[in-house]
Image (cartoon, protein in one colour):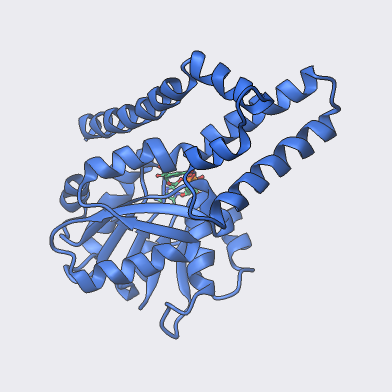
Length: 272
Ligand SMILES: NC(=O)c1ccc[n+]([C@@H]2O[C@H](COP(=O)([O-])OP(=O)(O)OC[C@H]3O[C@@H](n4cnc5c(N)ncnc54)[C@H](OP(=O)(O)O)[C@@H]3O)[C@@H](O)[C@H]2O)c1
């Protein structure tokens, strides 16, 4: 399989590096294209990359075209791509809010997939949700799943609404975790810990809790009940969270991201 990644930013590069390291490529190197000359020099030093600056030189060689530019660059890029594409090629977009139908129209091909990654893809622990136009075959879906899984896990969803919803959970989710970490570090500092110790206390607590969770079949509620005994310190903290409705507020935050994802899609369509 010949793969072309367009846009070597945070996300495009994470996928490109992971795919290039995998065994999913044909004997050819991974093709990558970015418009920034500085970035090109850096890309040329990466093993198993073939770097391009012109779409005309690489698009026809690709079976799969991975589009990883910012949504506001999508219109110009797709306009340039359209005359170079053929019906047998597959386009995968990770651009937030850009719908399958708008890509089919702009690219003039039918086999289009839309994916929503998250930042831990950069360390091989990402979660990518994806969906596809009906023209994409089962075999192609399973091949794309393998490509996306080079950066972590991939989950197929039936609808594009699911992609917007996953933006509110896994796409934006890493920031919610960082928010919680930051709040706990601030509490530690208020209790008198140094910056260093605040960081170590919080960092190791998160790591330990995730490891415990991963190594068992217990739900988060079961783990909370194991840590919290009646009248104890953890129960005092959990009761305080429940009394302050933190659970509902976290859910509201996730829905705010979900709704914003839908809005962004509409804003992009209005620009067309
Ligand atoms: N970062 C996240 O956590 C995240 C999560 C989910 C989805 N996404 C999606 O992932 C996509 C990429 O995000 P990112 O953070 O990786 O963006 P980024 O770091 O800005 O990378 C995009 C790259 O594409 C280049 N580019 C723009 N137009 C191009 C063109 N016509 N041809 C070739 N290269 C072009 C940009 O160059 P210039 O810098 O010179 O413009 C830049 O190097 C976005 O659509 C975003 O919605 C990101």
